[in-house]
Amino acid sequence: MSGNTNTDILLAGAIAAFTVDLLVYPLDTLKTRIQSPDYARLYTHAATQKANPALFRGLYQGVGSVIIATLPSSGAFFTTYERTKALFTNLNPTTSSHPNGLIPTPLLHAGASSIAELVSCAILTPAEVIKQNAQMVSSSSPTNATIQTLSKFKSNPLALWRGYTALTGRNLPFTALQFPMFERLKENIRAYRDGRGLTTGTIWESGFITVFSAGSAGAVAAVITTPVDVVKTRIMLSAAGDAAPEVPSKRSAKGGSEGLVDALGKSVEASRDTMKSAARSLNPLPSFEGEGKKSAWKIGRDIVEEKGVKGLWRGGALRGVWTMIGSGLYLGVYESGRIYLAGRRGQNVDEEDLL
Image 1 (cartoon, one colour):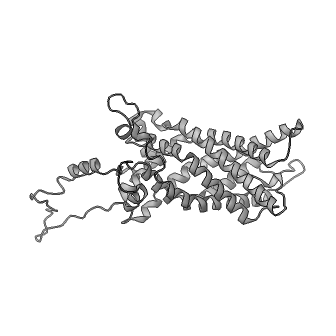
Image 2 (tube, rainbow, N blue to C red):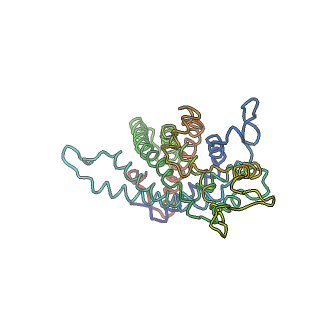
Image 3 (cartoon, rainbow, N blue to C red):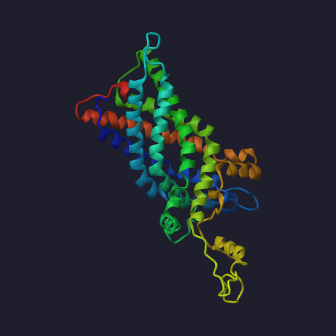
């Protein structure tokens, strides 16, 4: 790949991820809260069903975990994507009637981005679980939201990867849709400008074309995959509640199943529902017990039964706006960073070598 080293790709991806995380994180927090099953209870007025001020508090809760994990995950994504795309392009057989290869270029890009996403999600899943649960912590809590969320996983750290399938289930179709649309739109814009003699060849022109193409493609892909994102949010929010181990009941010396008793001699098992209800009212971190143990299909059916089909599209418009801004900045900063880093060494990045 002319002009760029692996270090360039890693640095450009890390800078892009850091920039986007800081700028659009509040929109992601709002989207998580809107998609939460506790949205009506925690973030709306009971009488009017309109949003209350709590919805807009603590919008940066959990951002630290995402920044830490996003830097290596984005570097892994772009490195895998660039190398896989180059490998697929070289292996694509050509004929006289198909000089660019028998396999359409959009399919190559979709395959490369999907493989890169699988690698990236393995790194990002724990941070995504921590982030979404931290976003739901009450802003009035005296304890840091991220620390409070991490304490839920002390007894079962593997629960942090419970949402991997859900995350890949959302990201794979998203990237498979976004990257081919992004590549095609960018090519069309460049061809349009070349045909009219408008091309300047500056880093600003390249960045603008990338921002517009990536933002447009990302918004379309985000809206289409919103139902999968809603299910993913439910699964990840349930991970904290499911990570807590069940308290084993004690058996009497005679082999009975009396269980634990409280200070008044009443069975703890018998009053478990009351205790859970009280704990939920005191604990600023909502517990979505059981949903993480359900299949994604079952959770989707539950959402439809509860909210109707429109429940699967909750937060879709906000996600579209958030993704348009995020994708545009993310890929725009990434490509501009690659051009800049190569230029510092006196080298150029060929247009065909860019995303």
